[in-house]
Length: 218
View 1 (tube, helix red, strand yellow):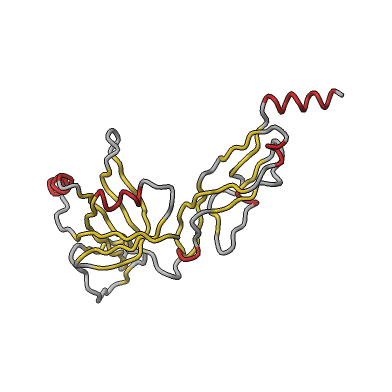
View 2 (view 1 turned 90 degrees about the vertical axis):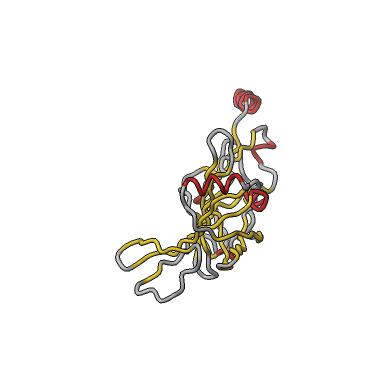
């Protein structure tokens, strides 16, 4: 995956009033979740903007509250590409992370909040990767219409093994046929979608049905 450089500022004010003030400055509240639970007793240092959030008895995760600018995240969010984010929270920490969730205003589409998840070299993560179709389907040559049903697939792997896109060859895809998730394999990746989910298909058109009917009547 490509990398994206992003700077943030640790924050302490977490109330609604503080959030309104941040947005007036064109800043977006954000949260970084540490992806590994912390076992107690915890002897590490919790930096400014960090807090421990309990998961279960004697276990918690480190959560960091910070802000990013609208301009800083624009090219990260408004793109079909996926990135590993090299996140620099000034005065706190530098980590690698992925986008976990984005909240938009229901009317204006303004970005209200962003969640990030810290990642590590060997620990698998789950992300959605864009699908690209390659080749010329036999069914299209016969008059069918190619349809991409799933523009992204959910994969699980260490982040260094995750590609920028998943290439699916469709040369042998016949008229009225589909390619399902269960028939696909990519080295080092585990596909998390349902195996019977249709990734792409060549659908019968009226012209193709007519041609098939004419051929059958001869």
